[in-house]
Each structure stands twice: as structure tokens, then as C-alpha cells.
Length: 112
Image 1 (cartoon, helix red, strand yellow):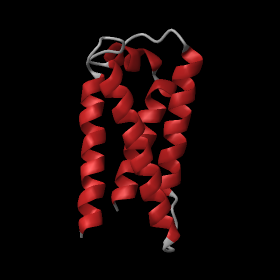
Image 2: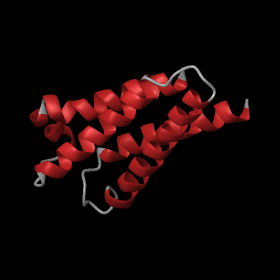
Image 3: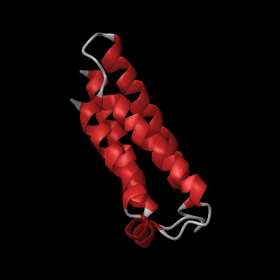
């Protein structure tokens, strides 16, 4: 269930700049390297799809969890490394909070 929720979050977040770049950039700032924006969007969408399509075998949820955790750690690190310095907009700190929330949810699930 958690991997599916994060998968939806990642697919929506990845598709947003691909479907409506102007609104994405209005929130997160203009992007000068469009190829990089589209690459990250595609990878994020792909990660979300992997989470959504994880099968019900023991390895399926484990793989979806690993994709979710690695995605959240990577995005959180980038958000915290570059938003405070102003390299990227402070609105990325909202994403940092969401990524930290996913990591906390995965940690809670692991403790159960």
C-alpha cells in the first residue's frame, strides 16, 4: 500500500513538468537545462511506475520499497543541499518535507 501511494506521488510529480512545464516552473523556478528537467521527470515517472506495478511476490514489495527509499533519499539530499543556498527555489523545501515523510513512513512500516 505504501509503495503504491508513493508510486502515485512520484508519477504525478514526474509527469507534471512534462505535461505543463509552465505551471511547474511557476512553482519551482525556471529551468535552463530543459534536457535535465525532462530527464529527472522521466526517471521519477519511471520509478513511480515500478512501484505501482510491483507484483505480490515477496521480492515485489521489497523492490518497490527499495526504489521508494532510494528515490526519497536522493531527492531529499538534493533539496537540502541546494534550496537553502538559493541554487534552487525554497519551494523545494516543501518537496524535502514530503520526501522526509516518505522515509519516515518506510521506517515505521519496517518497525512493524
